[in-house]
Length: 204
Image (cartoon, rainbow, N blue to C red; front, side, top):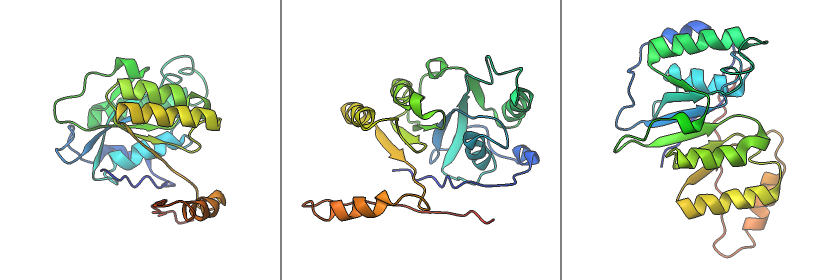
């Protein structure tokens, strides 16, 4: 199992992209596919990317970024030039591959562990999860919430179980009263348990 510290970092200088890192994933690193980077200094996916490029997540190597908007129709709009700059720096300094679709990813190398971090629109999560599994990502981290409806979440859970994929989803402890209810419900089920991992490094 691979646990990632994906706590949000703030006020990160763009120059961190020039920090020295090896361009290939080491044997004990997950090969990460970031789906939905967003605009630098605004998109949640971008903050995750900068963490990995800055070696803040030692067990993860950002290998690919899938960003259909800023590499497509949004390239010339607000945030487009900033994303293009980030793309060029990441390609040159870290060898990150940029694509518009998960279907464009190369096959997973023998022995590699490919992980998808999906940080796009909630409505797209069910489709993106399916595409990530087909692209060889057997561990998938979903930004909250996982899907627009419970029905979709149940279908995603079944797909993951059928394919042997592990799906992880973040939660915000500051606004998630359902956590208490989940723990209370788990206590009523034989052998039921809920595991929460919190690592909030944010400092205002």
